[in-house]
Image (tube, rainbow, N blue to C red; front, side, top):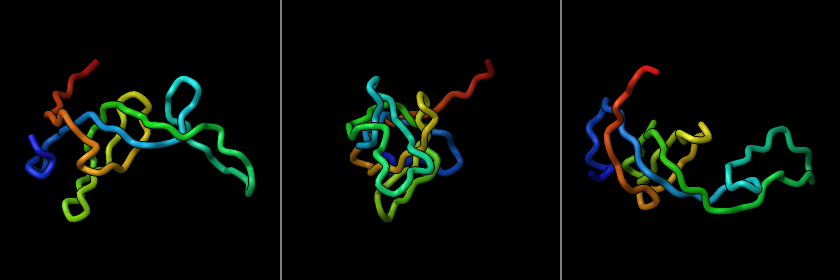
Length: 92
């Protein structure tokens, strides 16, 4: 399924890639309250994961995703998303 064709009101997810700051294990690092001139704790790299689609911007061809592994939010272009599929929510 193409992201553009997803019906509104349904839960979907996809695999995605983005460039972000990563720790030594390849996981995203969020820097909070950095002082001017202070080094970021991570190094730039490509991060690949699965994300739940939260918002689609059809005009700019971007989606906001929440990563299922890190729980971080990312905004990526449609071209950096693949394997789009529905979500089956279950209780644990």
